[in-house]
Image (cartoon, rainbow, N blue to C red; front, side, top):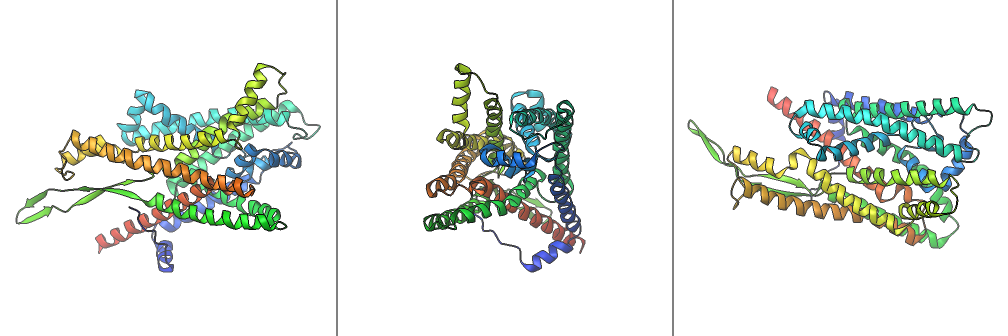
Length: 445
C-alpha cells in the first residue's frame, strides 16, 4: 500500500539545478524566505523585549505560537502574527463555502475565475482577522507587567503597533502567495516549516541543559528520540501510502491500429490533506486559548463569570487531557473535510468521467454504482488515514510527559508531521518539475 521514497542523488541534484525554470524558482523561494527571516528581526517600537521574553517563557500558548512564527512573537516583531490570520481565514472561507451555495458554486463550477474570487475573499478576511488579533495581542500586552516601555504615549503606541502588526501579517500573506505562485512548494506551509526549523537550536539547548546532570532523564531523552525517529518513519509511510483502484479502459480501433485497453488505476491517498488538518486544528484550538488567556489577565471579580473562564481555561489548556481529545477529534474531522473538498477526489465526478470515456471498475456498473463504490473506498481510506494521523500527533506528546522531558514538546509530533510533510511535498514538486522537463525535452527530440 505504501510507495517507497527515493532520496535525490547528486546527479538528480545537478539535474534539478540545471533544469530550465527550476533554478529560478528555487532562488526566488530562498529570497522570499530570507525576506521573511529579516522581517522577524524587526521589533515594534516601545516593547520591553526582555520583560516579554520572561512572560513568553512561562506561557505555553505564547511559546507555541512563537515556534510557528519563527521567533517573531517572542521578539514582538512586525511579523509577530505570522501566517496565522491567513490560515485561519482560509479555514473559515473553506468551511463557509460548503454551507453557502454561491461560494460553493465559485469553488466547484467556475474554475480558475471562481478560485481567484475566493482567494480575494480570503485576503480581505485575512485583513479583518489580522486587525482583530492585533487588538487582542495589544490588550494582552497592556495587562502584562512591564511589557511596554515607560514614557510611551499609549494611544499612539497602540495605533502604530496595531497598524504595524496588521501590515506585517498582510506582508507575510503576500510572501507566502508569491512562493506558491512563482517559487517551489506551498508558501504558507513553507513559512511555518522555516519557523519550526529556526526554533530547533533553542529547544535542543534547553533539553541539553535539562538532562546534562540527570542520568534518568538522559535515558528518557534516548527513548524519546527513538519515538521521534519512529514517528518520522510512520509519517513518511502515511504521507506516501495510496489505495489503488483498478480502472479498465476500452479498446478503440483507428484504421488498422488498436489503441487503449491498458488497465490503469486511480490513487486515493491515505492522508489526502497532508499537513493541512494538523495546521487547521492548531489554528482552531489556539484561537479560544488566546482569547481566554487575555480574559484571564483582566482580574475578573469572583463569581460565575470567573468560574466559567477558569473552567474553559482548563479545557483548552495544553496540559489537560481534554485538550488532546479535542485535538484528536479535530484532526479526524478536518481530514474528512479536506478530503471532501479536493477536486480530484469527488466520487460522482470521477464516476461521470469514467462513464464518459467508456472506462469502468472491474465488476461494477458505470454511473451511480461506480460513484457509490468509490465513495465507500474513499470513506474507508480517509478514516484509516485520519485515525492514524491523530494517533501519530498524540503519541510523542504523551511520551514527553511520561519521560518528564517537556522541553522538546515544541518540536514534538505536530512539528514533525509538518516538517516531514512539507519536505515530502517539496521533493515531490521538484520531481514533478523534473519529469515535466524531461518529457518536454523528449517531445522536442
